[in-house]
Length: 305
Image 1 (spheres, rainbow, N blue to C red):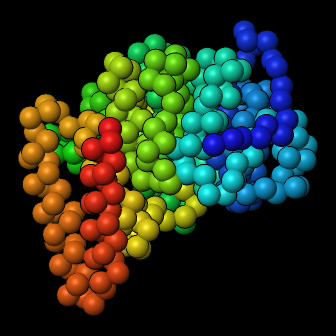
Image 2: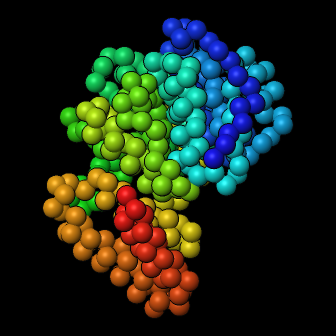
């Protein structure tokens, strides 16, 4: 896969504390709100790395009008989330910041969110990711307070309220938040086998945890999500990808390894047999077929691992 850098800067390595990495898929209004929030904080001089899969000729000008330094990387609209983040993180590492603020264009930063994430990160050198509390834009209900991963069953659990301070998170939803550069260097980049989407954030978070870094929810740092989370949407594509990538993620992270047969029994019952029967009874054979194809695709990927 090739990427085309539209603009390039070469800052002094020691002068950059934070780089903001944003995946842009066409939501310019939301993106500009987050950038406006950044301009009111102490990180207003941080370069913006924009991984752009929905070119908007007016957007670069709008961003630079805010006084922000912009680096754009244009990728095809078909590029998956993992590959977009992979290219973006690689560019961020070349700039050599201490921290990377990772966002999507459906996230709106609230005031002081970046500074609170940065403060938490600087106070705890063992922290690999400082994650914000994600609220629904329309209701202010909590969408995600991070999540846990039950490794023996390969089961993620998204938290809907801030966890106790002594409860370590296993993943940050979307890996939205502030990431320590050293953690990225040790863990490496995203696994493009999770393209086009689904479970790439859980996989990357677990890899960070496996390197000994903590993932912490900074519940004073708040952002809003402008669209409903799509993880549980029952579309043909969504069912195919989640069924396939759930298996791949478990293959990589179920522990102890002897528990993988237990995971397979749980996976086949909960995520294959029951939903297939449900969709067949409801007269939706296409969705049932998508699940079965997802199993086959996931198993093929695991066998190639």
